Length: 334
Image (cartoon, one colour):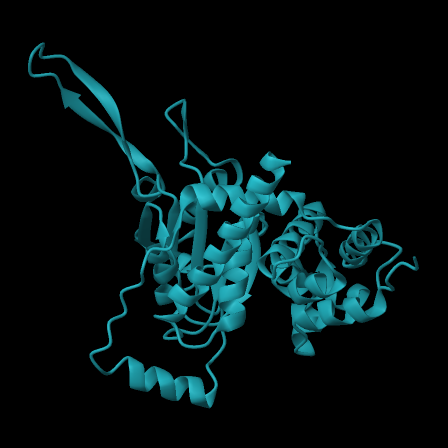
């Protein structure tokens, strides 16, 4: 019993640190509470996050503040049209041993060898360089010249992108989008929040974020997330929601058949379960609920639905389809 009590006390301590982490980020970021929560959910679930929003909304500052609050290695890569895969992964250098005169290649690790990688404006670089992240995000490894290198743990990619309608953007391929646990939308602040931004960012106030959490605590919390309970009815509902997003499935609604060309795959269901567990733990609960799924259905699924031309013509968004799914797919009767 002492061991159990010790584990519970340690877990409560880690959960308290999550509150401190929220406060530390709020020291530099005004508002955006839902965005901060979704980033923390991605952190707890061990997944990667894609942040999308117009320039100037604080996406880079938000991720940088998270990196400062965590006692982890943090690197930022500014994605540009001329960025090469080797600029991210690393490259081999020819070195000479001055003692023997022999030459040999040595792998110089790139910025991806870190705990927290900020891929800034990821859709400003061509697909070849975007794809360089694919193995790292999925397998937590980098293969170069026949050798596989393991990335540090924990490892997160937090990527920002500008809206695809802007000039000079390259849409991320579906295979890479599917590697992001959450697609987080960053919207304009409210009137009061924007006034606070104007006040706080034009004075002498320091934006230095205190460090409040170490990697060991994050890894421990990720283990606790896996232990959060998901009831059989909730698991069935999540499965049906994902299957109903596929136009060829018997569960598909009329909206899905009309507006969706390609639905979510099994990874969407896995992501929704993990994200719901992480949200429950973030709120101090040890069982996921229907409300957790409803809150995270859009961030988990919006980048995994490929819409039809009819949806574009009628100005239907993925979020509209997902909202209709949540209403149309009945929760299993107990």
